[in-house]
Image (cartoon, rainbow, N blue to C red; front, top):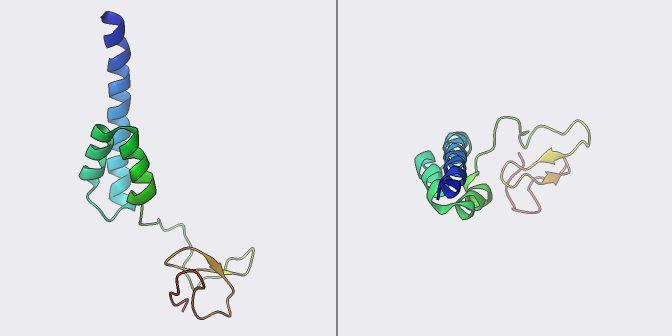
Length: 101
């Protein structure tokens, strides 16, 4: 019994830390409530974490280039909606159809 508790306690504390990190990260990168994401990861386990990484992180940081800024290495522009690379001469994205101007 002591062995089980000695294994479960560190695992639960680690999972609590992961859940808190998800809540902090969701506050920066998600349009949904950060507390709900942290709680869903804590209760939902690995499934909650996978869902957060797949659908929860929908706001990109400032490090991404806008659609009007050409990539200096390739000369292509990045669509602000779907992040695909397009030729600077195009008016709309060929993937999502959003305007590149």
